[in-house]
Image 1 (cartoon, rainbow, N blue to C red):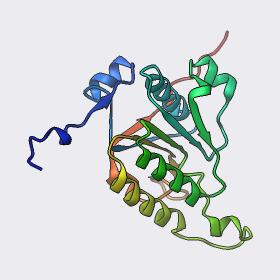
Image 2: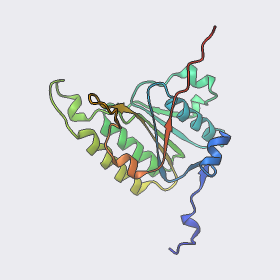
Image 3: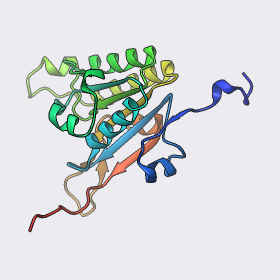
Image 4: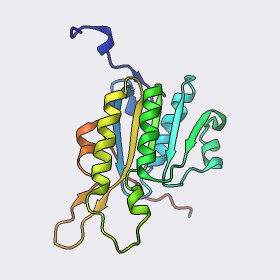
Length: 202
């Protein structure tokens, strides 16, 4: 097609968070991968649930892949999610999680949340004892999954949640993301959440 073809227009789904909608020029882009990262209790899952609520309010479909087993029904209800219209999956291994995300993208599901990349365990790793080493397995699995989902994703907002890990030793504290560098290369948006000070009840 030519560059001015309508099929190349990137449609967006507003988050209904005014500041972010302005920064993102209208919301979350369809057909793209988005990486949400942050330290512990930074609001990563909260952000994803808020995005799902925004999608549901527009009559669209959402899939939540809960590999971390952190989905909470009562909390989700308080946030205003329609649980009867939300597909929640708890796959048994990382490969199954990626297969579900890829299949959902093929079906054109409006938003797919994978929570989280850091928690994914490969099938081979889950069957072995703790003393076995599996260097690079997660990175290879995520790289392959991103290649495949990018190929088939035409209209889905695919959100990957990941945790910021800190290196040990040395005077300089380094940050790293489990799952390899492919996540950053394939992501159209990288959203880093930073937790503010605790709210104290005095």
